[in-house]
Length: 233
Image 1 (cartoon, one colour):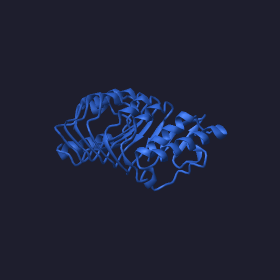
Image 2 (image 1 turned 60 degrees about the vertical axis):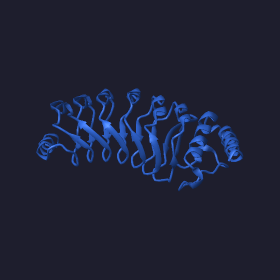
Image 3 (image 1 turned 60 degrees about the horizontal axis):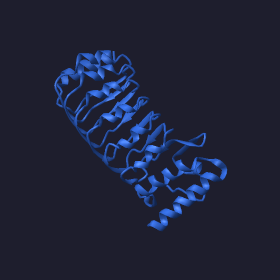
Image 4 (image 1 turned 180 degrees about the vertical axis):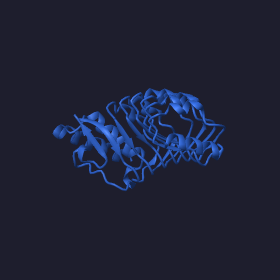
């Protein structure tokens, strides 16, 4: 395994340098991602004889990795801590894989991240406060995992959010009124959790909302229907 890892290391470094397709540091982080998620079993191949910008699912701009899109590609494992070094990363889209562990806090160092989609994996635990460091995040999709606990009020501090999709998890408790601070929010999907109580009046501030889903919780259906009519009128 060590010999294989070394081979990947030098292949990535050589190809990153050849043609100046991507900075060597970024290419080596991609190799770490490959190793940590059992890349040999992926449903797509990365040819280490090719330049990094030819690797499936990778978007390069000005020699930096700005996008990783590997949805439904049979990734198994935990995301590596080295991902925090992708300082120009704007999109990380890894739905419908077999990722496990807690919310990958290393990603909160990727301050330019705009799209984070980790839906349909096996992640759990609570959403940490450090998620608020992603001040440019527009789309947060964590549906179909095992996240739990109460919905944290600090989600309301993520004022750039346009999509917040946390459906089919194990969140419980009351809806935080602070979600009403997300004035740019267009899609809010919190369905199929264990949320309860009434919907806060502050949700009236969500003037940009075009999609609203709270079904499959312990919230009265009459309350949900009332708010559906309000948002979709």
